[in-house]
Image (tube, rainbow, N blue to C red; front, side, top):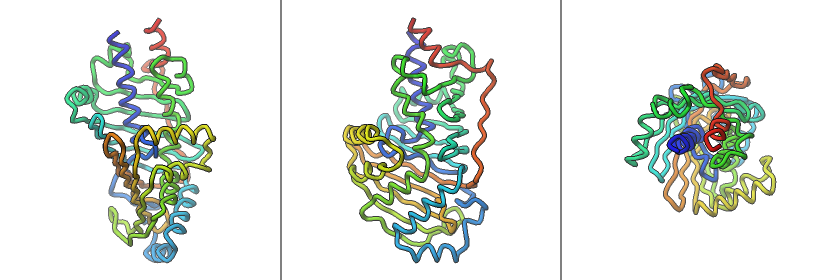
Length: 313
């Protein structure tokens, strides 16, 4: 029985680490490691390009940025997200592919001010995650209890297409859309849905000259922003229900784009029934090539779905 309790809790923790606000209706995540630029070549675009972008209306400039992101396939990211219940902070960094080539290779740590959750998370330490398509591999850190629960294996394999028949795990199937939710294009489209989208002005972010945009959305704006993004009506209905259940009142975005129109940083804050969910995402080293993910050795891996089925008889 102890193993049955340990594994699902830690899987959820790992999913939170990799998805940032995957539990949030807007699906926002993360902050890229500083020191680089949001551009693909490191310059972040010239001052002249920023000036030209600044002459556009705010919706025109953000729409231009959306197109610039769609022309890329991957970037380096760093994620810093805080959640209220229980009080948790997650930091993750690595590389992610967007669009049709969904993949990620991340390392993360999670901490909590809640005594019980904090103690469990401190035992786990650093979490590693590799994901391509709907298959993820997670290395759950240094916890002796986890090592025993995973039968001495370092990595657990999660195929999100195979979780529906596993009691207690089907709710994690949403993680298969993790890379899609982390696509900055969605954040930019969310900003475009803001009725008060505005240009704040030119600012330096990590040594890169950027143009700052901001906007605030209500719950209906969030759902409207997701329409036309490949979601079915059923998906939109589920999103509407999730927004209502979470008690979301307002979501605020701040986006800084470089002269190439690529996001250097995205910040968000979401007011919910349980408190404020907030995050800071930065992006560097944009590339036209997808992230290459290598599966861990098979003899160091255990399939979590099969393990739980065996435990539950």
